[in-house]
Structure formats: C-alpha cells, structure tokens
Length: 396
Image 1 (cartoon, one colour):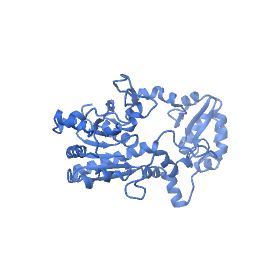
Image 2 (tube, helix red, strand yellow):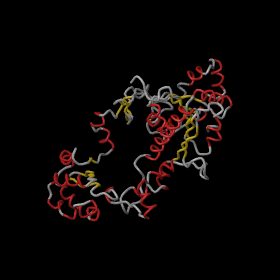
Image 3 (cartoon, helix red, strand yellow):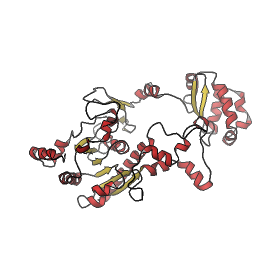
C-alpha cells in the first residue's frame, strides 16, 4: 500500500501493557509514526516481561501483540535531559498520548496546559482507570475491576452461578479503541483550527457505557436485565445456544421474517403453532420454544445444521480457541498475518480488522527496547558523543 491515511502524523506514546498500546497500534497500523516512550530505568514497557512465552531477552509475544509498527525510544521523563528531549519531540509531534494513572499526566507535564507553549496544535490524549477530574484520579485500576463495578460481570455467565468476567480484557480493548477515536477526532480538529486540546477516556466510563440498552431500560423503566440460560438475548427469541447431536449451535432469528425462514427450513409443524407466531409471543414462551428447538436440532450434528442454515439464518458454531484459530475462514479473509521477528521469522499475529481500499495493512514487529533512540536523537541534532553521555547518565 503506497500511502496510509495517517502517514505523516507523529504521535508520542507514553504507554504500557494493554489498553493504551492496543489503541495506539491502530494508529500505527494506519500509518502514523508512533514513538513509544520506554523508561530505561524499569526495563521499558512491563509487558516485555509478561509471560509465559518470550522472544529472547526483554521481549514477549504479549508485547508484540500490542506494539506492531511502532518505534521505541528509551527516555526517562523525570530527568531534566530526558524532559528536554521529550519537549524537542513535541515540537514536531501532532499528539502525545498516555495510559497512566489519572494523577500522573499533570505531574509529568503531559497535558495540553503544559505543552501548548511548545506546540499549540498538540493533542494530548489521556487514558486512565477512572479519569483525571474526580476523587479517584490517583486510584490504580484494571479491566476486571471495571467489569465488576460497572455491572458487566452480573450479566455474564449462567443464572445461579457466580458472576463471570469476559474471557479476554474487552474493557481494555474497547477503551483503547475509543481513546484512539477521540485522539483522531481531536487531530482532525487541530489540523483544521490550529488549536490542540486534551482528550480524556477512562476504563470505568467505557465499561459503564457498554451497559447500553439495559442501562436505558433501567434508568427509564426500572427494568433489571438478568442473566438467562444459554447466553440468551434478554428480549429477542430465539437468540441463544441450542443443543445439537454433538454440541451446540447459536441461532439468532432476530425478526419475524427470520423466524418464518427458520421454521420453513426446519420443517417441524410444532414450530408453526400460533403461540410462536410473533416476537412478543415467543418471548413469553421462551422455555417451551427452547425445548422444541432442542428436540429438532438434537437430531443432527452441528455441521449438518450449519450447512442447511448458512446464508439464510444468522447462526454460528461454538468453537474453542484452537478451533477458532484454525478455522479456514480466518485465513481466507486475511485475519492472520505473518510478521517476521528476529527470534521467529514466521511469527503469526492476528490481522488488523480495518481495511483500506480493500486491503489489510501489513505488520512490522516491535523492535527491541530503544531500537529507534539513536536515529530519533540524531534527527533532533544530537551527536554520537552527546547520545553516549545521555545513555551513561541514564536519561535514555
């Protein structure tokens, strides 16, 4: 791909672990020059040491998952010489983004107020656990805590069982994506007006926002959405897991039209009864309908029903992790990319879900900590001797 949408945009990322790096990787995939600041005093991004699988010294598959296409600059922002380098970079940057605890951006001078005299167009993105403007600003926080307090765990899992979290850190990933959306919007505004600004996103706010329509139902009607058996939709029936001869299938007949098509394909007279004729009636008869559909679908294996229903009724098999990642479909659509790494030439990572002109972007492995320090400092005018002196004092 000759050009990418964010080509020419320079973003300084003071980030580590999951949420921030996940979001900024989209920006890097889309062509932005993302310069990842890594503190040499602590070995850089903590996720370099997140196991159990590693790629040589101070690198891991976990780290690579969230840091493709980025540059790495070792820099101690608490040292005067490190701060000076950072401010020189800000002069040529379009944005500074961080995912630090809410009280840290002010202390480290990463806000628009602190940087606007250096570059009035700079956009400052802040991703924190609880935000920067309330009494939780200095609280550390992680994805699972947000799932718990925002009510998401209470909606996950089977009725009568303990609350459950999502299988992966979806609040981290959603917050990273929302933060990058906010940053991109602010960049567009700064490009148009010449005026930068702060953009704040928090894990808690995004987690709460994911309550979506159950929140609206409760706030306006006092309705409490509860867990239903087999991951059923709270309002639409049939929309849940159903038994087959060898496992389960997820069916989603979300409209009366889909219900009509489903009953025609299944050819079971009991499903044509008037008591199932409308969405409202099916919701009232959810348990009976589950029994009837189980009885029909249990006569054949999942593969049989997928072949019969595909393209007509929204449906899917229930795959485990190995099955999901060896599914030929994901290879056909390019959702696995090979990213050469010095320690593994055929390292495979999931592809970017965004396509540009019908193509997925290529991936370049994250380099070793400080891989781009020399080149970036030389660009700022530092000599080899000055760079060596900065390294000796621990600033880089």
